[in-house]
Image 1 (cartoon, rainbow, N blue to C red):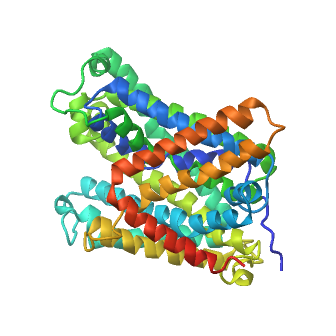
Image 2 (cartoon, rainbow, N blue to C red):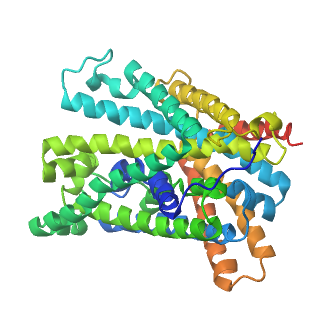
Length: 458
């Protein structure tokens, strides 16, 4: 049986993978969060987006250098294994297979379901729901939970049974989600300059909102979720055509597109409503003011499609994560998880494992973060804490790159990795201040999962 993945994705799909996974729900609602944290200080918010983008770009650029040297099955695991050692590579693979990718996929499936229902109930106010929309039915209602599980199963099924279709879905959803962002960036800028709203927002903070303590620090932290996801593209390096050239190109081009999109969208939104309106009502009010109520609600549909594209990309990576370990002869039931379906060339057994873990995280997220059934120890936000853990685990890889790759230029060996390390440390410190005791419970859980994984290292 053939146990080698085929190279089926080109440069455009790889770029769409980077852009489409990063630009999900975060860009639509983090603008409101950042304005709130800065007290409506628009220039400070732009600075926060820039700093968050620079941190992402420094990490992204450093990994793009590694992708030109190391290539096997799964980019992140390959880099950790080659630079730090086989055991660290295994732990990195176990982390993304059991915590990072499935937790993110579960939460993004819920966000997709939520905005789908928001669009439906806004377009059809009489739409029957067990818990009415105004009472939170779009967030924790049975319809939302059923739709969440449907999206989990749907994205899993598409990736397991039709991987080429999954790549086309990733490309198409990326193009679709860029439409409202580009419209708001261009039209919002023109309308804002014409009406004077943009100049007013830049000159005067929101009158009824005070900034939090250390607003720049808090605002940069808020950008972490919006900028996360680009590393997932490296998990497909064994399936990207001429990946040693196309993967670094995709990372760099995609990163530049993401930063430019976020900045121009943030400025465009400021042209459609006052700072106070954006803080109180979110970015939707800017769309409604400029394009009218109908198109303002259509934004919710675009957000749902955007999140589904991100979920699809996460499931693409999640389905291949345990396979990356099994292909090395490591992890539980390595022989079974290393098998590829002869028809689809997909690791079907590994995909089933991904579906099970994603379902478990969906249940955890509902019990602790949505319904509040469990609020005691080990109740934490699985998205932000998993993201920050990833940054923490990048640091040894960056350090070893600086130590081992002495033939590289100063930019590639020293400057970019140092910026990436500083940015990663910043995110870790921000997480400690932002989540407090939840970090302790999460670290206990994280260490327990890693210890469990070491049971199958050999």
